[in-house]
Image 1 (tube, rainbow, N blue to C red):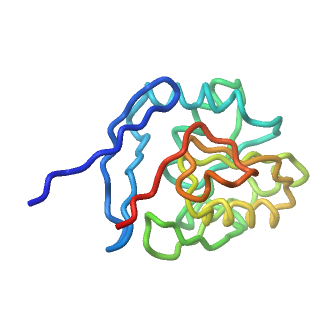
Image 2 (cartoon, rainbow, N blue to C red):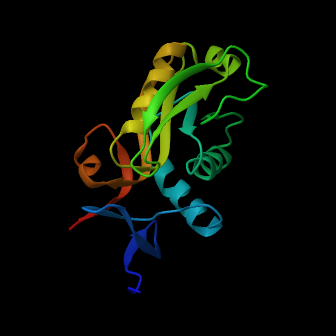
Length: 182
């Protein structure tokens, strides 16, 4: 049995050891999970808020972006944010949808947004928020949802930009996260 490898991440004034996880036989990633880490969530939200543009609402895709967007909204005093769900829920009225293929999920998924939320987004400046942006597939799906709803994408923000995402000029982020090829 091989010993677990870690990547030391420094972000928002904090350090975390991220486990190195295999995506396939040629690629490993550092597993960044914000769930349950209140200190990290609060610090990253505080620092990311300093970089984001003016907006009317924020949206994230389920699931790891949820604690971040909630904390950002709390710190900003915002009363509402949106979550694109990975499954259709019975309480959703006239939902809209977009497909996504995430590097960490390994399969196609569909993101859903409630029709009432879509109506609130129409004509509004929307900030896309995620914990990590890598391939940009989740962002693309969120962009499709916002465009379908008639919203105006005013920015894209994440804690980490992984791999080539760090070279994009349309994303604000706190730190780069390397990919590990072998």
